[in-house]
Length: 345
Image 1 (cartoon, rainbow, N blue to C red):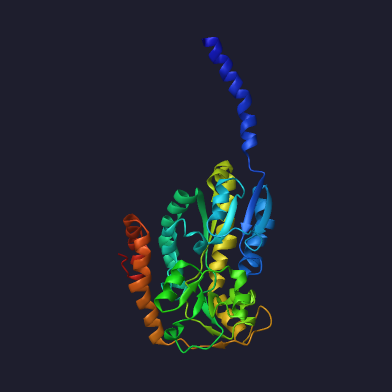
Image 2 (image 1 turned 90 degrees about the vertical axis):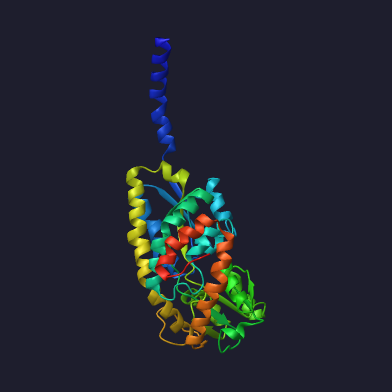
């Protein structure tokens, strides 16, 4: 018996090093956001093409949401199957399978970048919990796009004029918001919107001001209404738990450090200005990103701000609370609720 035990110990001592070597990460398969937008071009591309390979000692295979034709939560599901290691995607794209995540970015909840950051910091532990529980991934980062504003084919005087219009919504909470105003929320991919606006398939669409400019929305729309009615369309950066577990402690520290210092913090720093730059670029003002468009900016009245808040409190927040468990509602009230002074029920 003792001889057999010694034999087993020697056997495992020989095979374990080889086993551990096989488990090392040599290549990270990464999906970034939309290749035409500044978040990818200015931050994700240099991060994954230059910094991560150099600092972690791995190769990186980088693609984008512009190239991957997987809708909704399917992209995160692919991570569990080993297809991708790191994915940056829009939170609204995955809330179908994890409605708790939608609590982060309710329409008209954060009308300025400072409040948006406080909300994200408060809700981050909740996001971490549900991303791991529902998708088997670890949260690495949360970054905002510019404030989500409304692009229109025809002029409106305010939110009351949305009745009867078809509006492309950036997520189901935005769809709930425009529906409460009498419009019809339309689900449509970001890249399909310019053609849909041009053909009259939709009357308007919600996206970030600079995002819309960069993607050509301003070339087919005629008006922009800069009330941040679609929130901030947060991007979540995630890594599969299987890949995370294979990284060394040093690699984990370097990856999280790079994401914080060279991605998260600088994106948050520029997003407020990019919101303003987007409106300027759309409305024939000074444009640091190219030739400006000629959209007409529709002034936002205090009455519309009040109406948006009322719709949030009376329609959107209760609708979200019905979709999630009581435990999640409590988590929201104890985090975001305390930041904005609201109670979901």
